Structures are given as structure tokens and as C-alpha cells.
Image (cartoon, rainbow, N blue to C red; front, side):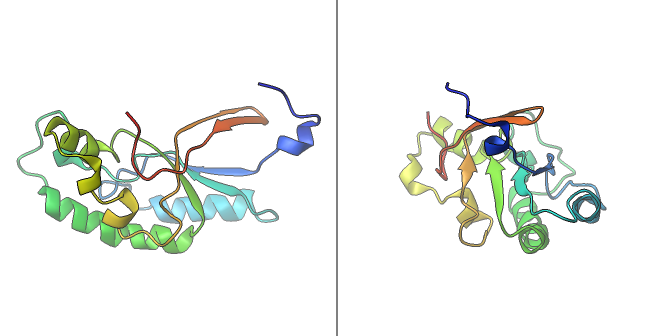
Length: 157
């Protein structure tokens, strides 16, 4: 890979939102991230990157689900409700592909269900238009971002 001519040409202000695993996120997660935005990005508009695992989908994991936990439907309904506040707070966000978010696709493949039968993650979680952007691979070095993005709603094999 060829390096850019100047460091300034590749500098980004990036606000990273860590694994939320909604609906199991910390009760103050949204308030905390909004506070970080005000403190550290008061004078600039950062690129917002959700690092993935924005939803938990506990019942779809490979491990035995907690029998006292939410059902798959109840978990999804609660996640959709809570995600609305995040969509409103951060309307332009890149979301990294993650294992929790794509559990449903893995389960579908295990069952032999083609992707064409499935909705996108954005559709399933009622994301506003444009929130279907998924970053395939991202890595940030100190001051030097290096990333490859694909704008697909479903993972590749």
C-alpha cells in the first residue's frame, strides 16, 4: 500500500463507540458517549465509528442461552426500541461488522437458508436510510488510519 504524500491528508477525528450489546448495554452508555463527544469533539465533527456488537442477539449465539433471559423476539424488540435513541444521537455512523450482529446470518447459513431470503441488519433493526453501511475491516494506528471498507449489508463468505 502506498502512503499518502502528507500526514494531514489522512488525519481523521474519530469517535469510536465500543461494543454496546443492546439490550444489555450499560444504563448510562448513551449519556456517557454524548458527554465524550461534547468534551473531546466540541470544535470538530468527528467520523463516528461503531466498533460493532451494537446488538447482543444472545439467543442466537453458539452457547446455550440463559433460560431466564429474554426470548429472541423480546430481545430484538427491546434492541429496536433502544437503538432509536442511538440513531437520533448519531445519525451518520459507520458500523463495523461483528460477530454478535451477524449471528443471525451464521444461523441461517447453518440451516441452509440463502441470504436472499434474509433482510439486512439495517432493515431488521429499523435503521434510518444510510445506516446499512458496514465496514468490513478497519484498523487504526496512532494518528494514521488504515482501512478497507465494503458497503454491504450482509457478510461475505
